[in-house]
Amino acid sequence: MKFAAAITLFAASASAFSPFSGAKKAAAVATPAFTVETIPGALEPMGIWDPLGFAAKADEKTLKRYREAELTHGRVAMLATIGFLAGEAVEGSSFLWDASVSGPAITHLTQVPPLFWALLATGIGAAEQKRAEIGWVEPSNVPVDQPGLLRAEYTPGDIGFDPLGLKPEDPEELLVLQNKELQNGRLAMLAAAGFMAQELADGKGIMEHLMN
Image (cartoon, rainbow, N blue to C red; front, side, top):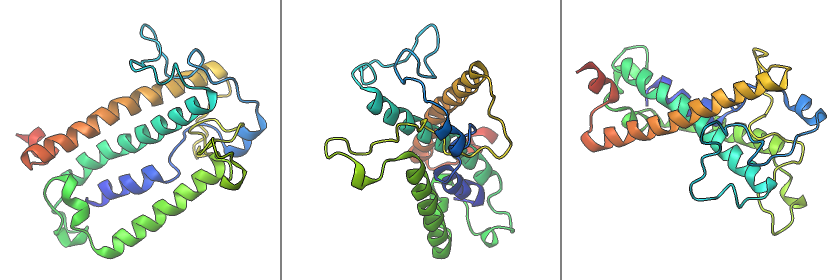
């Protein structure tokens, strides 16, 4: 991908996983029960959309893992949709890769120098390790029958990334912000999947479709 689209992958898998509270603050506050009745994102009139009953059959620990996965994928997808459009909008410009990267965004990463791949992989690996240290119980302390166990005090998605101090102190205002993030993330997952499917189907970039 172009720089913007590539940064999508780096920033998304990096620490850009929460506009909410800091990790130290989260650890000091009692975490409320995590159930299908209290979980953010369950909006009227549908409530929690769970047609296959995964959430309904999950215990609190499993439900937290589901939410962590949804937030992570939603945040990646929000950045990816921007990356698709921005990467294709600036393709051919001389300030990146000597204008050698072109075509649909899904092909951009195959056209960048190998050094960029190494830097990208290193950055993503470091960020994911940090996320694991904040949210997950150390493997040596996890029962064999509970792999991938999240910390009891950890709120899914809250890894302490709040550079602008946007987290509201009021619980109701926080819930509104969480719902907005979840809804935008869900829409972005559909959009990113649609972008990829469209470019795979006809080999044309999304910007090319929009401009024609």
